[in-house]
Image (cartoon, one colour):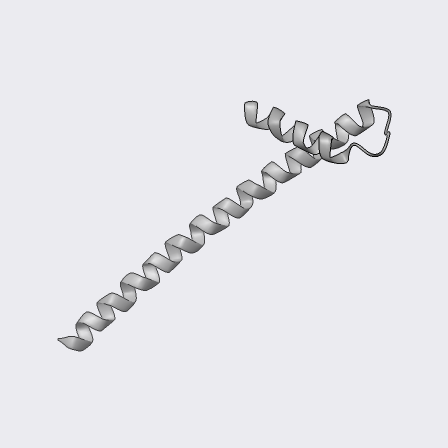
Length: 70
């Protein structure tokens, strides 16, 4: 009986870990897409300003705000 309960607990933990791993993978994929979109939009802003350097953070944060508003 004790072994059976331990096996059930182990299976439950394994299922929880699997679900957590899937959720983490989905989060990483979403963050990857969001970062790619931000990078592309920030680069467009850079080009639209005539490719002038020194405003990279401003472009990045502006791109993030714009994408979050959508």
